[in-house]
Image (cartoon, rainbow, N blue to C red):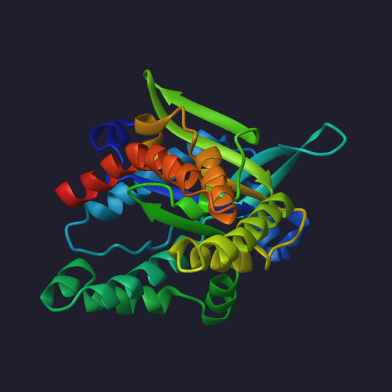
Length: 282
């Protein structure tokens, strides 16, 4: 890792839910950008993104938006049914995601603080750099979702403990865990959990969250793959049984087994409430 990356470790904890599609799912222009980056190792891509984010944070004038950096593309290799691995691609879409994040921040904060964090002059300059046509297309087809201070339980309903799992370590620490599955399997699992929650716990927020995520996944091709990337929080929770605990908890609710559901929740809470408490402490 570079000296800049060593100075500041990622904080707060950010986790990601990503969709990767095969090369021919993208436009000709996108394919050219992908081909320029396809040989780069995944960890180098992560390091480049981290260094770019630090440079934005350390600007002398507050401006969280990317300027003229080329958009990064992540590559993952997933085994096909014939046993060979196939490359899949996830564009970072940073310009679009920072725009949406700024809009969300604008809705949650009021007064002078929002102007300090995201000055109007920075917003205007960022808007001037955006292409309205490609921006609209990217918003409609966003490949990455993020969450701070823990992996949302709805994401765990999409994956199983026997899915392809990559544990990335650095200097004795778990820097992240990435779990990847076929999008069709994720959609089927999500739908099953939605049906079970609709019967057993229709009032739970988890039902609405899962419904929204499955609708999002359905806009992508069925030969795509989905990745849950824990990020640095993995070092605090791995090895992690959360996918199984969420599945068992939902099944227990559908069967009106309140003791089983409570046991699953206790296991999840013991793992993730301390992470949430870090957010309040900060």
